[in-house]
Length: 117
Image 1: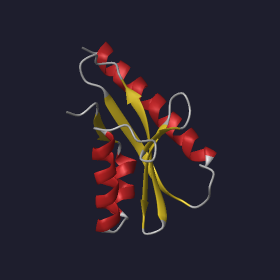
Image 2: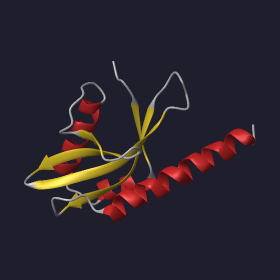
Image 3: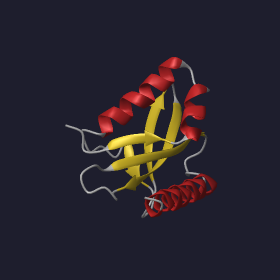
Image 4: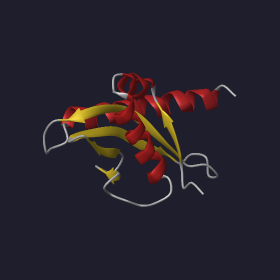
């Protein structure tokens, strides 16, 4: 049984489309694995709001940034915002900022949709 559901924003699809099939498959495998087991090697908290799906494949570090949407009490969703090929030890601050910006936009749009019901 999955602990959460994962949804991708448009930037994730664009990122995955640029990768070769084996790298993409490994990333998706790790995402599915993270839904079932707790493993900081594949799903790690970066700050109070932002997490990352982590994949090492062919000596490359792939990262998909994400945040939690727990507004539906029955279904927890992790929203993946965008991805990068990590080139240094430190996670780029601009990518954490981008994830926060996309998270804020997501909740703003979601709240607007609820107001229109």
